[in-house]
Image (tube, rainbow, N blue to C red; front, top):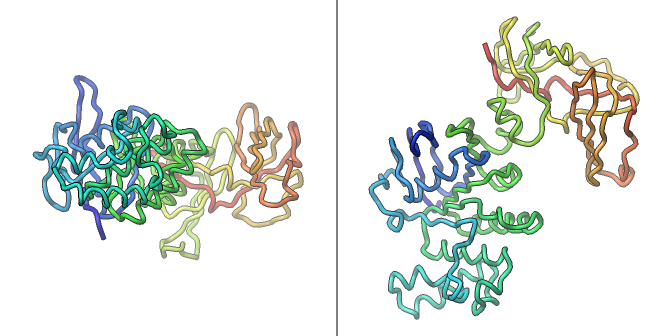
Length: 379
């Protein structure tokens, strides 16, 4: 496996009275595509700049493969950075932009030429070597920046929101290309983004950050399906999130897929009523918790579902707002007063080309107890 392990331990950073990072600790594995995800101002770019060597932390441990790199300047850390504004030299050709790091090292031209050609081929720009940056599209400029960062053969590639300046379709295309480049090169990628879909699409693991703290680290599946805090549940995708009180707990006979004891809990939610949820946490009666269910986990129909299963949650409401998006329809279903449940219905077949449920329709919504999730135990 190529790349370096990156270990960050108890890293803090303040700018005057503003605390950007609070005792951040994480370990990034060799060859991993690791994303730092969070809203603007959460500290993710500050952390990336500390890894790169552009900022110095207040308290710190930062190692590459067990070696302390904090005393080293950026050019000696075996880590290169791709910035969101490309940072290309406008007066140099694509070839010379990519060759620049090697020219600085006084590498012989005979070595530079084939190496630059190899990296231009890697980023699919072999036919654009003699163009200037102003003759390229945004996606092509970003590919040049990536090739220039990789030609030094770093152990760690740092990417600071590299696709944010591109339009939506091009961003998706470049994201696929970036993932393919990672597969070919195999070094450690550390990717900063505020876009949840970007992080979920390409990451081996994700660290969700907010207000200088790392709230949760996990695979995309773990982050989405098992959020560790209210913030993570709300920030990653869409969800329905409510505060609840544990009203009943029943131990189930079966174990979950990991062999853990599973419980069925009844939750009292003031806005909804009684909701069933399965959990591996041993809850106590009267405990305050946060509970969530994703919109796509909920079924919606005009007719009452024909089921007697005890683990099904069933509510009746009216469609306050249907939003048709081609591949899906999102419904805002009013349960009582102004309490809305978001439901997403995917259109997977030709017969689903249009929604059969419209505004003001009376509907039933239902979901399994296993599809809800207790996010936080508050007491």
